[in-house]
Each structure stands twice: as C-alpha cells, then as structure tokens.
Length: 637
Image (cartoon, rainbow, N blue to C red; front, top):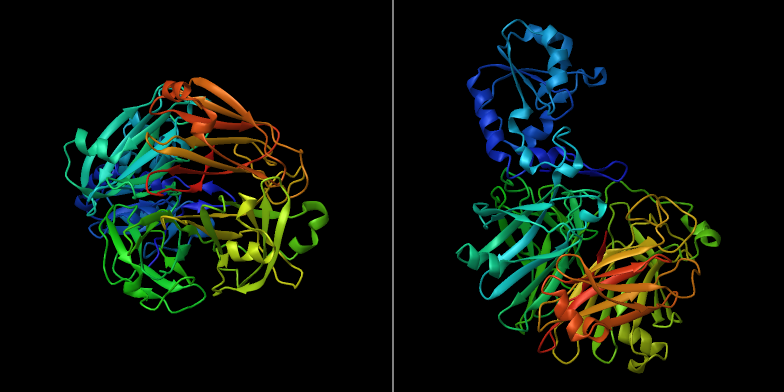
C-alpha cells in the first residue's frame, strides 16, 4: 500500500509538506496536537491547502472524531478526503463542532478568514502547534520554504567491524548561507533514537565528515545499524543534501562507497541486481517516516514480470530491515534485475552484496519514473543533438580491472531499450560501437567489456577510457530520455568488486532540449563544471576518473582546475588538467598534490573540480590494501 503523499514532481521539484509532518524533530509535537484533537470531541477539519491527507498518511488519526472535512477550493467539493466527503468551508459553521482544526502552517491569515464562519467561542487548532523550533529554521516566516527542510537520510552502521563515513561540504555557504549547522539524529534498527546532536560548520565552503566509529566512541554507544537523519540549518541555494557514503572495515578488504539517498521517497525503484554465483544480495529497507510500514506494503518482482512477491513483515517507524532478495525471489539470478515496490515509504535504498569470498560492496538503486511516455521525435533530432542522451561510465585501466555494463529499465513506460554501447579511449577516439538492439524490458544482457574490446582488436595495452550508453534507433524503437545503466568493476588480482549506476544526460550542447543539458545553478544549458571530490583518510588513496562527454563536438579540450581546499574551505594548492573532448583523464590525488599540500588540507580537505568551458562527468573512489577499492559517481553544487 503506497502512502498518499506528494514527494517530488519533475515539473515542480521536491515537496516540503511531507518532510514537515514527518520530521523526526517534529514528531512529538504532532503527537501532542493529535492528543489535543482527540480530547476535544468532534472536530471539524478545514483542509485549506490539502495538508490533511498527508497528515493522515504519516500519523495515526484514529483517535480523532472528525465531524466533517471542509475545503476552500470549489473543485474539491464532493471529493473524498480521508474517508469523508469534502464540503465547502462556507458550511463549516453548521458542523456543530466546538473545535475546528485548520490543517495549515503559517495560519494567522487563514484564521482571520475563518473566524466569521464560526460560532463565537469555537476553538481553533492549527498545524503551527507542530512546528519545529525556530532554531532549526532557515526561513521562519515561511514554514514550508524548501530551505527549511534541507534534509536527508543516510544508511549508518557501526557493528561487526564495519563502519560508515558520510562526507560532504558546506556548499550552502557558497550560495550565501551563514552559520550553517547540521541537526543530526541517529536511529537504531527498530527506529529508536540513539542520539541527537548539533554540529556547527565553519563559515566557509568547508569539508566535513561524520564517521560512525567516532560517533559511537564519543557518545558511548553500542553496535548499531540504522539511519542517520541530517537536517541542514541556514541552508541557501540548495535544499538538497548531497554526500558520499564510504563503508570501510577493520579488515582492509572491506571498502565500498555509495551516493546520497535522494531525499524524496518514490513508488518504485529499479536497478537492483539479482545475485550472481556465490553472492547474497540484501536490500536495506529503511523507513523514512514516523508511521510503521505495514506488512504487505513492500514487494519485489523481476523486471518485466508482473508477479510481485510481497513482504509479510512490518517495519517500525524510522526502522531498518535487511531483506535477502532470495527470500522473496529464490530463483532470481544475475543478470536479471529486480523492481522494488516501495510505496513512498523510503528514500532511495542501499543494497549490499556479500560474496562467499568474504568481500562485499554497497550501492544504491534508482528512482523508477512513473510519469514518462515515449518521445516520438527523439530519433529525428540527431542533426541538432548529435549523440543526444549519453550515459558515461569509466573503463578503468584494463590491465587491472574488468568492466561489465548492464542497461537498466528505469521507467514504467520502457517496454524496450533501443541502445548501443560505445567505448572511447582516453584521447577521445571511439574504439568500439556495439549495437545492442531493442532490448526487452526483461532482458538479461550484461556486456563484458573485455570480450567486446577484444572482438574489436583492442587489448589491455589500451589503458583506460570510458563507455557511453546511447540510444540507437536504426532498427526502430522509442526512448524517453530516462536511460540508465549499471556498471561493475572487478579487480583482477583480488576479486574485489565495486559497482555504480546512473542515468543519461545531454552534454556540452549550446542548444537545449527538454531541460538538457542540465545546470546545477541557473537555467540550462549547463556548460560548466563544479564537482566535489572527497579525499580518503590515510592510508587510503583517492581515485578520480573525469569524463568529457559531448553530444556534439565542443571545445577541443577542457580547461579544468583541481583546487585543493583545507577543512575551512580555504584553497591550499591548485593544479590544472586538460581532458580531450569525448575523452577522459584518470588520476590519483597523491599524483597531483604533494604530501605537504595534502597535509595542509587536513582530514577534512577536499578537491573542487572547476571548469567554466565545459561540463565534465566524474567518478570518485578510494584505493586500499589487498586490492580493495570503491567507485561511484560524483556530485556537484
């Protein structure tokens, strides 16, 4: 059963009402408000802005005696709202209720409009009684301002010798945010609060890290596996909390990383791989709301198969549960893919793969869109858009790593994927074009890049480069622009594996098409780069693979600055590289910045990758002992 909440619209962006009503810091106040309403007898509800449905989805209102629900919008009259037929607010005085509940924040003006309709002495309760304290608000004058709810969740674990480390930067300062702080709450697997604390950030575009081992030691906690809730106070420019999450272990062979959780819960997620030989695939089901997920609300099915297997267990509010996918889909095997029916109960989940060799990895699934339809004109725009949508991914040095690519359906409208796989060397020279045909939604086509390159006469001596997954309409078919793929990398000597997934964009086009090329700041086209590269703590080395994808030929090379910052956000060293158009550059922090500069950057140092001439796409990773490594895509701000 999906929650009846509005979380994100590609037309209107992220919504903040569900965050306001489900915020861990506001839950106690909401519960007190509900108790007040329950004690008041019959209550007439004025659902002025459609907030009551969200309140009912995220909290148990069974104790409240609802005398009627009244609305302002004429077009809503007669609609069913939380089991009641909505009536016009002009009739609210006829309810006979001694208490009216105005389901709205910032209620002063609506109350003024409401009072003439009520009998003298009628009590009025509002959602303002469930506000967060002003100390947690960026804009107290407008409560549902998205910047008041710059929040996100992170998988967070410190148990059995396994640790997590969340790393980001105070990029809000660069947009004018001052005295930025983090309000943090840690939940255990049952959703119980383990700790709450506030962490001030320096006034600068500083780097910061929250390490589970440090948190556990400082707060004298026992082992835990759960969620860390992050709320940014005094945010500016972005209401999105972006981060990299490293997982590492007491055993140096334990090393992996994954991207941020995407703060808006979705109905569906896809890109969850079925287990390969010797693997156990666990999807972490982490409740993002203050109400339990009921049994039967979460399901799995093979991609393209309507046979959904539903989980017969509930998950507590803010709780976490690991689900071995073989429990519900015992016959599923790589390279099959799995759809997660999440019902808006959780932000983008993590999955964890443990191998019988003892090595494991962690990655994330992606939002499966339900609002897309095929774009019939996309195949006719090559003269304007060139390659059009490109999904770039690294080819790591061939002598050291194996690479596997798996196209992943990521929209309910994608019954087929008409795609081709290109391989490009570091200089930008295309060395492979492999049409994959019109892949069925339930396809099981994983491309071993070693074999594909060998067929094209390219061997390990070619070094590194990158892949591009692109549309191929030469044999017909349709696309919608939401083209995704997953990419696996295996260290040949150790067997350690990392994987990453992402979606396609248009890159380095002066024209625009449906919001592409995207821009982090301002309207499209996005033709510049600002990427964050976190640095691994010693003795881990930092890997960065920068790709210069181009839908059409653009500048011959990039003009890319690598700016090393210290923990306060102050630049301490700078280097420049040039990436060939349609090419790539793979580099390590230790090769670019000498030990003195690295020491000056400190434990919270980071590299800002800046280019005003073109849009680069980047992947970051850490290199450890025993062939351990991690890899995922970077984020910008």
